[in-house]
Amino acid sequence: MGPSSSLITKLKVQLKLAISRLRMVQQKDTAIAKQQRRQMAQLLEAGKEESARIRVENIIRSDITTELLEILELYCELLLARIGLLEPKECDPGLEEPIKSIIHAAPRTDVKELQQARQLLVEKYGKDFALEAVENSDGKVAERVLKKLKVEPPDPELVTLYLREIARTYGVDWPKAEHRKPREDDQDQDDDPAGGQVVKNLEAPLTTKELNKATPPRDLGPKSPVSIAPPSPSIDNLSPRVRLPAPPELKPGAKLSGLKKQTSATQAQSDPKGEHEGDRRNVVGGKIPDADELARRFAALKR
Image 1 (cartoon, rainbow, N blue to C red):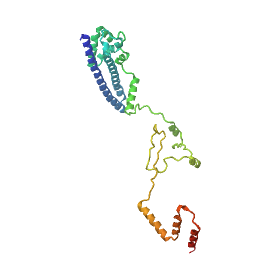
Image 2: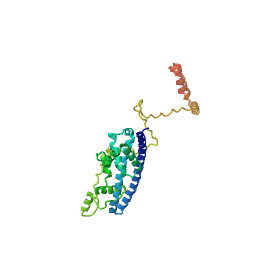
Image 3: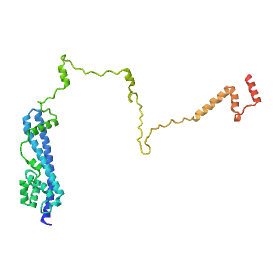
Image 4: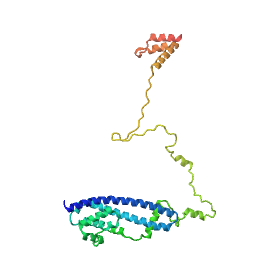
């Protein structure tokens, strides 16, 4: 294994460590900034605006540093993904910006793993390459990295915006000097010489005809305790319907049939006409009776 391959292996390991360390530092700075924002809200609530304006600059500087670390983390991930392009002696044009940005910005951070990765890159590409990156003589360092590294007081408008956002997040009434504009209703009440409360005009009541035309709501009235959900349509049945089963047919039991037979027998004994009716029912085939049968029946009726 040549010296170049050994250097690339070390650089690969160091980039992984730098990425992990950068993420941990960002999480730590974010947690600290959250505590500082809560303190700023307490200062604003206590009316200490000047102290809050001075201390909020630390939060702004911390946010800028966190954004810088995030950019450097992305550059490290890019180099790790394209580690094969680092093997040639000359720097690849597509990797010149992230490499020079890391060399330029790593000394400004407190991440040792990133600084060690910078040393390996300097060893890989030489001192002249590193000098160009530090001085940015060829302008290859990313503009957003240079902007994050500038040390200058924040704009007063940015400070005010930070304080407004902190106050809104923690529910603090700030700035207290600004009052809401009075509403038109309040102005009308102030202009009222009587000093009474203005009552808004109510809508006219509905007439009887309009009430008769109105459709009562479906939910009006008692509801059935049993509810049946309609089946969902399917390919076989596009318009399904709920069909309730018909009531079962009631057939007389053995006791009821015997009771009916006893009742009919009792009625036949008590009714003298039952024999004649039974004779009429016993006519086979439903034939018309002859003359002798009719005479006998008339004789029976005259008794």
